[in-house]
Length: 82
Ligand SMILES: Nc1nc2c(ncn2[C@@H]2O[C@H](COP(=O)(O)OP(=O)(O)O)[C@@H](O)[C@H]2O)c(=O)[nH]1
Ligand SMILES: [Mg+2]
Image (spheres, rainbow, N blue to C red):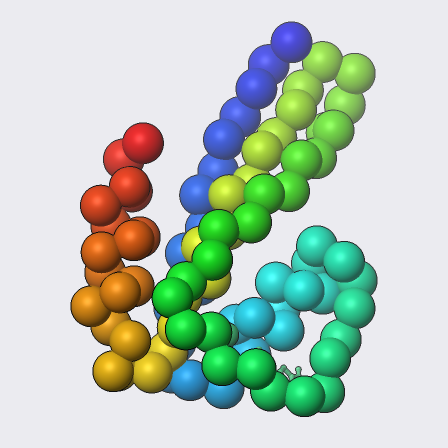
């Protein structure tokens, strides 16, 4: 069994659609209301590519607001190589 791990970092200005993209990808849902991402979130998606290949996608959803940047830098980049 082959296991691949892919990390994707969603970065961009506030309200540019990062969290909406993630929700569509993971839950196939679209929410109209805007909820600001405050601290950054990590989500996982497992894909069974074929009989003997699994792909794990690790998605980092970052807050776009500049005033939350210390939090996002701390939580994301400190764990980036793990
Ligand atoms: N019409 C439309 N609205 C979108 C799209 N992507 C995001 N939005 C809306 O734009 C707002 C901000 O989206 P969000 O994903 O929370 O932005 P983030 O701050 O980058 O995470 C929300 O109200 C979403 O519903 C899109 O592709 N089309
Ligand atoms: Mg967001």
